[in-house]
Amino acid sequence: MFFSCNDMGRWNGIAFNKTSENIKVKAAELKKVPKDSFLEEDEMVFDVSVDVDFMEPKSLEDSVACHNINRYIITQLLNQPDGSSQQEAVEGYIKKMKEEFKADEYALTCYDHLTGVAEYGLNGVINYTLHEDYYGGGAHPTQLVTIKRFRTTTGDPIDLWDIFADSCSNSIKNLLTEKLIVQVGVRNLEELKELGYLDMVDMFIPNNFWMYQDSLVFFFNQYDIAPYALGQTSLPFSYEELKPYMR
Image (tube, rainbow, N blue to C red; front, side, top):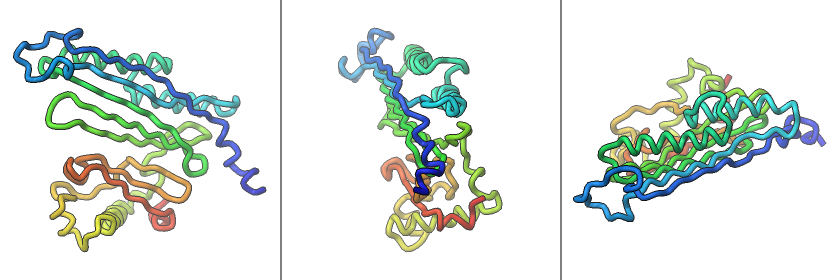
């Protein structure tokens, strides 16, 4: 009975709807391909897809929050002009990628698969995860994850220092290092470095994190704190662990 009357009842006021677009063509249709290319013809392609969640209000009171979140996705995550519709933003992203590919003298193949997923997290919070799987030449592809959080009431983004006190920066870094040591299964920082973690960089507090009902999960992309071969790293914390450092 309690839960039916609190803020959880408003969660269903915002729905998530996909907007998608994709293009896949041979590179030769977009640019001149050298005859002495080491790639096979079928390998030289331009392949870009976008499949992202946008917000849709179920009631008038949620329309402002939905508008603000959608505007952020369009301008900050898709880097499209303010005022673009959802479909225009998705198509504009692909158009920009296409123009960059055509202008690039060296890239003979490119794929960029962009997926945006919205989900409800902690009461009053929407977690938004943008996954990008990109390859434009070189030794290997890049997987990049960008995580944002929004208030369901206003659509305002929630940043790192909205949650944590500035004065606790060093303490949180130490907490992250300790968690990483336990998760990797080593005894100390020196052993972490021997494996490749924090060898070339110092620990930092990422603005990439999810706020779930029972935990806050920090996320590090490839190269953030470890070489490519070690992949991505997630460090989960209960709110009880983080309570001393939170506003």
